[in-house]
Image (cartoon, rainbow, N blue to C red):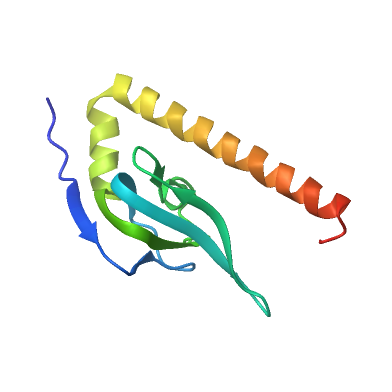
Amino acid sequence: MLQVSGLAKRYGASTVFAEGDKGDKFYLILDGAVRISRMVPGMGEEALAVLRPGAYFGEMALIDEFPRSAHAIVHEKCRLFVIRKEDLEDLLFVDRDLAYELLWNFVRTLSGRLRETNDKMTFLSVTNKF
């Protein structure tokens, strides 16, 4: 079995990454919770999601190479499995079956998040809160 140099790291009250940061890692939540949010000018923090064990985040920046699109903030003390972009690329090159499965999971997750965003936008436009 190929060893990935992932790192399980404990996070207390802190920011995992901030909107605009370079994305060079993605994270799998082992314990605790992480809040994904954006800062809305004049309003403050808008929580987009609270992710719990088994969920992952940070993959978008690895796929499109754009800066982080949101903040990832520790919501409850957590332990994260961290995978660097270089290690992920090596893994995807070595194991095509795993690459296929992982990338398909990314697509399903991103599709689900897009659907949720569409639902929120529809709700906001119907309730005139947009």
